[in-house]
Amino acid sequence: MILIHTHDGRTIETAAAPEQPLEHIVFLTGLWAGVPLCAGLGRCGLCRVRFISSAPKPAAEEMKKLSEAALESGWRLACLHPAEPCEIELPEPVRASRKATRDIPHTERFSLAIDLGTTTLQWSALSGAEVIAEGGELNPQNGLGGEVMSRLAHSLRPGGAETLRRLVSERIRSLTLDLERGTGGRCEALCVSGNSVMTYLLLGLDGSTLAAAPYRLSYQGGDERTIAKGIPRAYIPPLLAVRRG
Ligand code: FES
Image 1 (cartoon, rainbow, N blue to C red):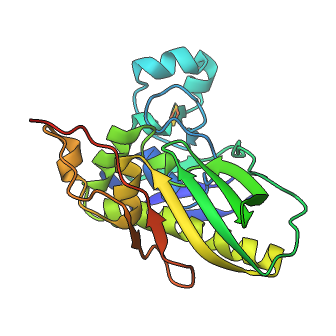
Image 2 (image 1 turned 120 degrees about the horizontal axis):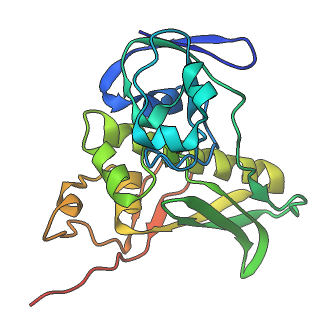
């Protein structure tokens, strides 16, 4: 069992999973939603946690990031240690802000275009050809891998692909419903464009063919897919691939 004490006095229990980094497990509780973690690279320092007892031996990267006094008091970077049973304390999370148009005009119907990047999710709502609202935020999967290969590696763990799919599909659903409330209208068309890995993760497709040479696409895009209940099916533009031979 992992016991997490938050900066605002809550205590959360979650299961240990030593095959994963502690940072993943804390991220999956939702406590680090919106925190721009580098997810395992040991660079951002935003996954700092304090072990209440039995702090693990510090890794070389931690010696550079954390002061001797901090290490001595039990502070560690959660991405550099396995999620073994422990009791930890979290400082107040440093979240990136979501940017979005404030005053959204009323419209009966709109379409929504989403650029699903590995790091960020950028979106524009359009009435006809006119952009009526736009915004950007972190990709909600960011804590489970900072770049495509580590995100893909997470998808190949048991349950990993479903977790990644759920995180991003739920965010697209809530964004669409928020815009429907904001405009007073209905989203009638949705387009989600991403690189091959982000698209596979969004659609819950088997990414193993993208994880190793010859990196073949088993899905080429160019059709409509269901992402979540209560929102329109999404058009997925054709995926780019190098044609060989
Ligand atoms: S240092 Fe960035 S997630 Fe750990």
